[in-house]
Amino acid sequence: GGHVAANHAIKSLRAVLNKVRVVKDNNPVQDIEWFVPPKKVDEHGLPVQRTVMPDDLPAWWREVEALENQVRRCFHKLMLLSGIRSGHLKETRKAWINLEGRFIYFPELKAGRPFKLPLSTQMVAIVTEVLTYSDDRCPWLFPAESGTGHLTEPRDKKLKKNGVKVGHDLRRTYISLAAKTRIPQHHREFLVDHTVKGMHGLYVDPDAMFPE
Image (cartoon, rainbow, N blue to C red; front, side, top):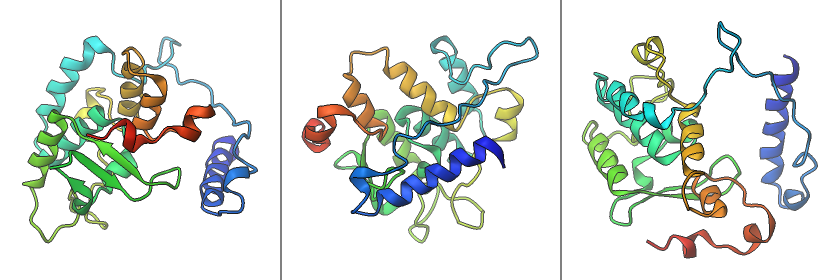
């Protein structure tokens, strides 16, 4: 219960209303003032770092490469390189993958719209690798022995014990590091499925921006 639960409830309501054509462009909870929870602090009272710092990326990569579970290893690396929400990545279906076109097509993400995730050369290599860990009978890119048949909780005990960041912290890392590049802001927003505000959001076509 409480403020955090209220945030989640309103976010769910917003997602539902976004699917209703009549209110999609005038969603009553679109610009609501959210409860901002206090920042987590460590034993010294300092804010807990939620991103992987650039200097720590080599060590992070080595920790992930050392994982025995090959599927989880690929999941964490693709999460870092794509910045996509972990919940959507866990549920990726093989049928959505186009290696020749170098993208993964998600029919619907959080905002209720389709999304085409472009794949770099390194990302293609990761996807190609993880595809070898299951046969054609499995529909999921990241298979697991779970009720759903795919990864549901990728937080490995070993990584947690060593303080290695995974999940949404990798999305934060991607967005933070991308902000240091020369990639235009509206391009960066498209790449992580954020809503592009202003006139750019009305006129820019992501298929025209990223034809390759």
